[in-house]
Picture 1 (tube, rainbow, N blue to C red):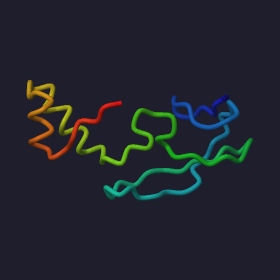
Picture 2: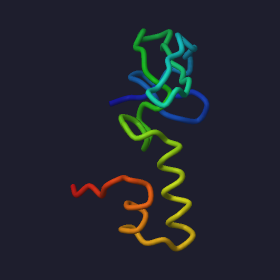
Picture 3: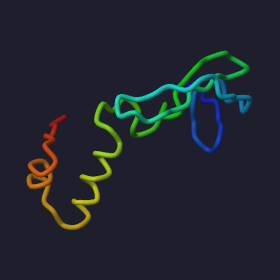
Picture 4: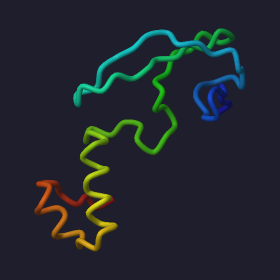
Length: 90
């Protein structure tokens, strides 16, 4: 799969750098994000497309809190209790 490139991150389907902001949308966590459109292939994609946070339902702010707690030495089980989250097995 080929990628459009803009602002140093891979996005859509054609390697074009001719990408513009198409619209904005709000996440469930009330964070505004951008939608882009490739001027070459006309595909639309979110700014998180192809990133590690693409498709996550947990707000990024919650993930950051848990990661900070883990870096401070809180164990995984304790972090899941404190933040009311759960571990997922894949």
